[in-house]
Length: 74
Image 1 (cartoon, rainbow, N blue to C red):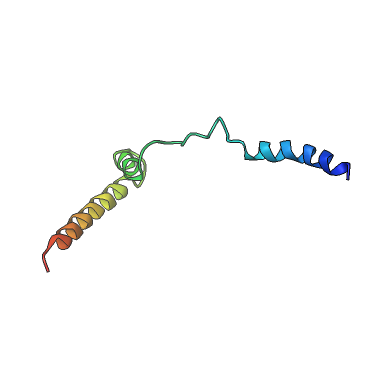
Image 2 (cartoon, helix red, strand yellow):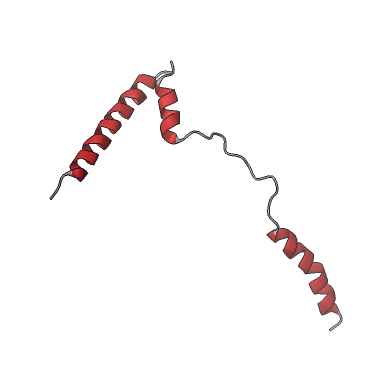
């Protein structure tokens, strides 16, 4: 029975260390939203950027149309 307190004394610090919070949390690679990143990409000179711009425009038109339909009274 003498080994039980020794075992607890050995395990307790390990368990507490495992539960400790991380002081240096990883920072996000970017603070931009997905829409902001897509917009920057659409204005770039990368291949396919114009396609991204057209997709954003069509998506925006669809969102406007959906909002108009949602606002119609029943």
